[in-house]
Every structure is written in C-alpha cells, then in structure tokens.
Amino acid sequence: MTIHEKPKNQNYIIQWLSPAYIHFQKGWKWFLIAGILIAVATIYSLWQGEILAPILFVLMAGVYTMHYLQAPPMIDVGISHLGLQVGSKFYPFSHIKAFWIHYLPPISTVSFRIISSSKIYRDLSIYLMDQDPVKIRNFLINQIPELEGKQESASNILIRLLKL
Image (cartoon, rainbow, N blue to C red; front, side, top):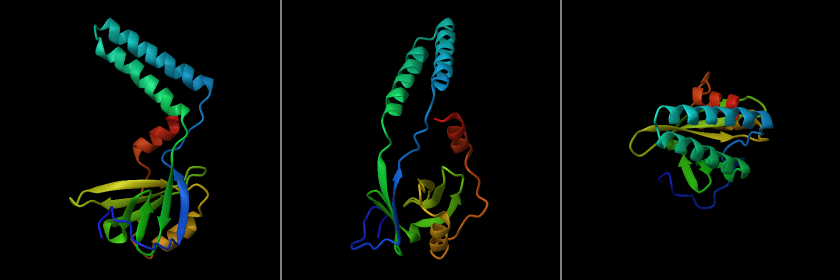
C-alpha cells in the first residue's frame, strides 16, 4: 500500500477535524508594528536603489493580509490500526518512523516523521484541537516508536511567538 492509497472500509480508532494552520488573533498594535517594519524596509530598499524589493514587500504584506482574512481550511484526520489518514492522504504505519506530541495548551500537536518513497524524512504536524493527547499517545505507542523529548522546531516557536 502506497502513501496515497486510501484503504477500503477504514475503521478509525480516533478521528477529528484539524485546521490546516492556527489562525492567531492579532490586534491593531500587531498590524501597526508590521506596517512600520514594512514601511522602513521599503524606504531603506528605495534609498539603496532597489526597485524589486519594495514591490515584493508590499505584495507579501497584501498576500498575508488576504490570507489572514480567511479562516483556515479544516482537514479530516483519522488514526486506525492500519495507519494515519490526513485529508485525502493515507500513511500506513510502515511509512511512519516515529511520532511525538507537543502539549502546549491551547495549541497542542501530534507530529509524525514520515518516510517518503525516496527514503527522505519529512515531519507532519497535526493540531490536536479538543482531542485527548494521552489517548492518542497510548494508541500510537503500540504502533510506532515515540521520540521522547523532541523539542518544538525553531520555526514553529517563532511562528507562535510572532503570531504569524
């Protein structure tokens, strides 16, 4: 069974809806600081004689603002005795090297180290929402190894702290 094949008659032990990303609420101060930073970067780039950089700064700010105004899409997640279903993709346990859980209420995640067909690892994080992390851990620990003490990545910490 490959990663993209969805097994027939899947009976999930645990199932929930997870957002594709966390939508952090930002106040006017956040937008004011971001606007000042973009304005300073744009003015500095123009002063340095750059033409493309200021255009990119403004475009990126516009795209981010449009992205912020939309609610994140919700993804169906299911864990069965065969593996992990995330949206339309199925990952059999034979393609999952390990898992770990970051319990940082209100934003807790379960992450999986996925082995691709080219033997390259990638990490997949799923927001737990109102799911019981102990129940998920107790089921997964019997299926795949747990990476205990795995720290949250620097990029995830930065995203959470800056509310991006």
